[in-house]
Length: 164
Image (cartoon, rainbow, N blue to C red; front, side):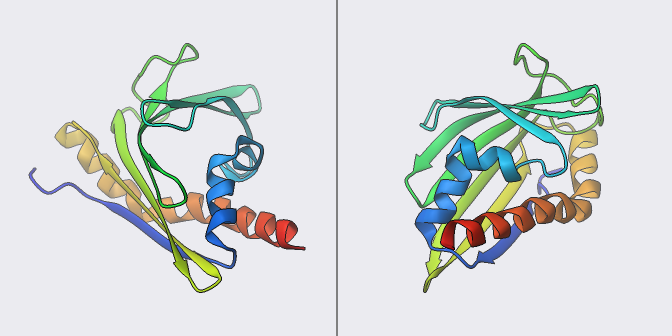
């Protein structure tokens, strides 16, 4: 396969860019909306190129670990990271719930002013993925809006709270 599937989600938030950036980069806010419906624990958040975000999502007696390795950080404009499933020691592994899921996704998030609102554009593409992993990602993309959309609904509540 030469063309990689690209997941794209663009959304306008009714909040200024500085506030939206803060919700994506302040662990005290990020854990509230990232992984809605589960307990999100941010073990480390080193917001700089070469830094890492170590994330655990807990539900019932289960945990799902992931590591986001920041590739590029442009204050209030852009975040780029490699997103990988990990074990509890933060070693990259195949996703235990979806064995054909790509081991690493390139995630890019941009923040653009639209008056007093903010356009957030998120893209994800598989990196160094096998054909099976690319196919799995392509098949799953249609359902990814639901997960991100649930988190974005919580973001709307956070923005309303911060602006009140």
